Image 1: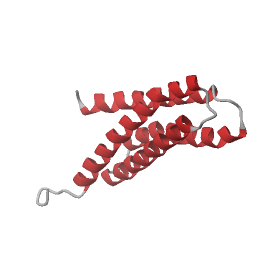
Image 2: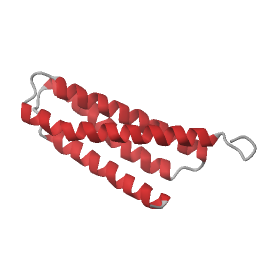
Image 3: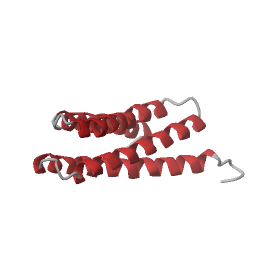
Length: 131
C-alpha cells in the first residue's frame, strides 16, 4: 500500500468512526448527566479525523508532528469518554454493548496515531549525518 493510499484509507476510517460515535450519542438518554459526556465525546471523536486531515496537509514536518500530537491526544480523550459511558451504572445494557466496538476502534486508533507520532517525531530530528 502506498503512503497516499494509507492516508486516504485512514482519513475514511476516522470519518467512519466519528459518524458511528455520533449515531451512538444520538441514542443516549436526554439526561443532564449525559450532556457533558456527549459534548466531550462528540468534540474529541470528531477532532481525530479533522486534525488527521489537517496533518496530512501540513506545511512542514514540524507542523505534521504537532498536528499528529493533537490527534493522539484527542484519541486518548475519546478512549476515556467511551470508558466513562461504558461504566456508568444507569446506562442501558444494550447501549453499553454498542460502545464495545467503538472502544475497540478508539483504542486501535490511539495505538496507530501514537506510533505515527513516535516515528514522525523521531524522523523530525533526523538528518543524513544524525539518524
